[in-house]
Length: 338
Image 1 (cartoon, one colour):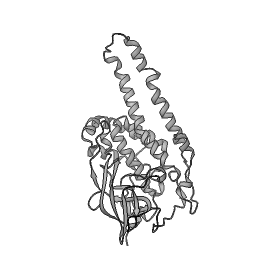
Image 2 (cartoon, rainbow, N blue to C red):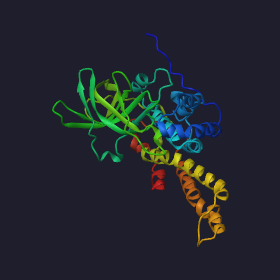
Image 3 (tube, helix red, strand yellow):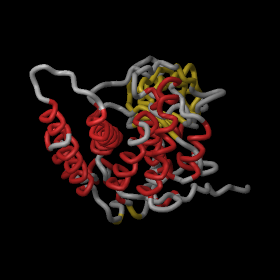
Image 4 (spheres, rainbow, N blue to C red):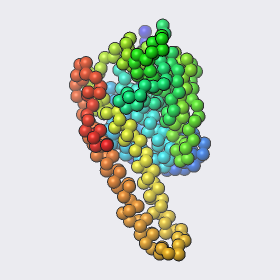
């Protein structure tokens, strides 16, 4: 049988510089993106052509396997043009990299060309809450039903992943995990529920599964009858990153760029607009806008994010046999993010 090796798009240059070069294009279309809640195909094609959405994929999967700091800086540059579009690309980037971290046989089922993109909604931290979405075993796999809100990046995603409760034939919960499903015919549909001013471009809509048949190897869970996965021989840095820190820093990245854009535009225009006041002189207001008080949120938050990112493991290490992922993660970034 002939198999096709996935060909992941190559990253075209330094990601931060690439993002900086795309920022004016995003700024040009930012109003349209927010009014329609859609990133125009021409704009997304320009982003995809640079390879940015796949830059965080592990090297063993054909990606660049870049650091968390590079990702934060890259998304912040995109957000200076459009916060919504940057959030969209940001979550596609991380969810796709997470999917590419799955071992065989899941990887071979979901990556056929290497250009696939993923969105999704992960389980709650620590697994304290049992998902209301369900995966029921049948002869050919699992029947999945449920709705997953806030699936950022859904407009251009080929696949979606969502937290599920694995139930037995009697409806009792026997495990919790993730289901990976294609978007489109025979798979997930998208309910356009997202309408948040300034962030409509993130496409954080709701994924819907109605009796979707999912193969056994694409439902990863901790219950009985689960598929045994073989861990990679060598763990890449991303394999050691705590999930909560990945999500926390990922959500902050576009906000950093949007805040910097807002500050720069405010400072650039403050002397061009009349200040209407009868009690407070104009000069002190202008001085405040250009002084440290206005810059404090940017100058304090950004170093904190960079410090957390610097604590994320950046070198590979051998994979300990039989060691669960949670025990492999480095706990220092968790404490720093808190």
